[in-house]
Length: 203
Image (cartoon, rainbow, N blue to C red; front, side, top):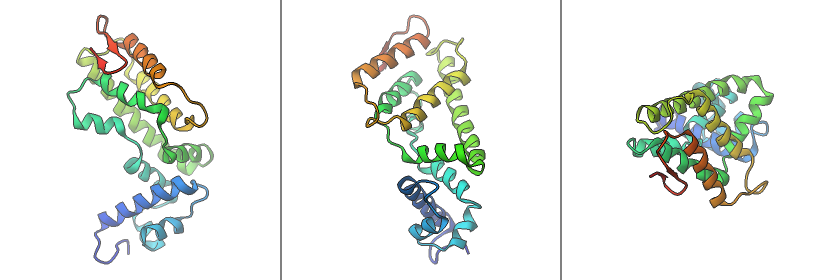
């Protein structure tokens, strides 16, 4: 039931996730019906429910798969790159961030407990991953060991998710000013004697 003729279950699931990401971003969570996503993916409602038990689960699954995960992509491409450099690279891009999917998920989680539950799990996963990255940076001697990995992870989440809400059309900041501020923050967190450049991470 959950499979399109000639298409594997995994391919059908991916079509649903891509369609969900697009439709949620365009129409919002409240303005989207399950039937809209099924139609966009070219499947029946029954096929959708064979893969996802609810609209809320589909929203968070789409966020996991098609949300903006630049930091994870950069780390996967070069795991030996200094973590502080990775964080600064992503941080510099935040004022230009436009991620309608995370905005919809965050807003829906405030109003709908069905979304709030899966979103708490999703945000917890992201926080734990960031905390592990901070712990790695501390092990490498890049960040002060006295810094709480969980607190810094929370700070990074606030910056990333806040940037999705405060877009440039609402408030804009100069790229050089923003990069310089991030470098000062990173410098305060770095091990003493490790200077941080606002153009390229540690130096």
